[in-house]
Image (cartoon, rainbow over all chains, first blue to last red; front, side, top):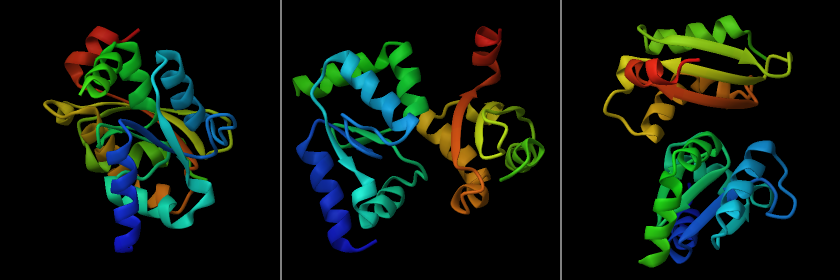
Length: 107
Length: 84
């Protein structure tokens, strides 16, 4: 990964409390897994920003290296990688996601 | 494209004690839902648990033989509570 790609990724996840690398955007997710994540965060009613990896091949590959995680979407809360779609669903269902975003938004 | 048996074998090669349930979601051999129960998940976070499985399936994931993978991971203790 190029140093500027890495710098861009860390800048995005540091500047936004809740950040999602996804396929497509909030209004038009291009993949069912990305859609799951958008739906969950929208249901919680919390502010979050997204990045469309389909528009940027450098970021699309770089983000997999950055987190050691091979799939998109990827959710970051307070600069930390939290998981993809399956983990978000689980954290939503057991109530932990709500706690995590509250803590992040309060800080 | 990859068979459910191959998916199970790749996971068991990494986690020999695992109970592996593989569901082909579309019948096309590239959209899978996989449930894995293993004692090796104990003490690990969900991210680390899923990373173990992605690691076991790395070849099939990076070659895009598997296009989509929904994962559920459980320790044996968690599984006895969750199992239907």
